[in-house]
Length: 443
Image 1 (cartoon, rainbow, N blue to C red):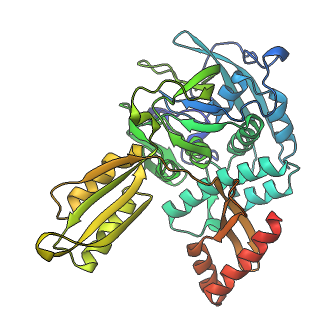
Image 2 (cartoon, rainbow, N blue to C red):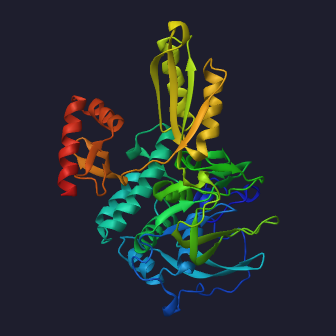
Image 3 (cartoon, one colour):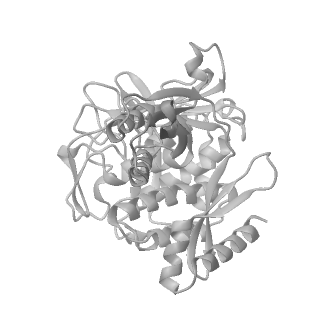
């Protein structure tokens, strides 16, 4: 998917919508393979990223095609992506891998040329396509995570059940290629993914639903938990599919993680930007190194404020506001202050990137005059969302793995409640069935 300049937005009747125009920014650079695509000695071996960091440095944002181009340039063999795509029940397109020059930086490009007459596809159509494919279980799972991230975002924006989502833009062939190709490349590397803070564009873009503000609504939903900033231009720096890929697979945001770089790959966007190179840099490195200060060790922050004049209703509203601002968790703890006054400590756990915004909300919403902050390191079980087919529909189930004993399996309650209402059964029955089906699938 090319970065889109809003001033050249599509006709809303175009079947591919705002995210999939590959012709609006002509580039005269002849198509060639990326620097590493045909150099067998430069290709990375399968699993070479295990124990390492894969850092996506995105000064000009990112899109699905830029992610794939950068990973190929980094050294992921082109055959890895081609084999994954060939396993899909999908036709009517061809892939072109070449190079572009952006402000003197020679970068790989990845283009999908689509034949006319492709059908519009919905979430359930694409998910069925993935299920019917010959993708390996690990690649299929990654692709489903990306699709679910995107589907959940679109469902929230349009206020419809996820199975009713129709991807007028991102359901196009090139989006499917980007989701599956990136899943195969990331699985091949096996590295922990970290992404830089992402620039957000301004202005508007024309899409199948009408004129949308930038950043696109689904893009913002996909980026929950990752750091963003004002990109300073009327331009679509981050596309929904690019946001879904990093939103589904990135562990965290970092301006630059502590690491020793080992390999670098570059992926170019379609548009030329006057004030910056439209490129994405993928860096594979060993984690660790000399820290600038203790801040680099911290991953999360705990924020606290004591209040002695809050009702239970107010405290509940504050917790909700903190969660809405990006807190991973928020709670109220009864305490006793000076002179025996009963009071509450309002607390929130958030990522370092969101700490400032959450602190602002705590000061705005509560009656406290100050907020305490202490930064912490949080150890986490690796977890992902597994989509499980049940008699009550597809239910997302959170699965936590790692060397910490048996997996923890928990169906998403809101999805179970919605399915229970639709089928006229108790929520506990949907929870039970989803848990049984998930356990069988993971066995």
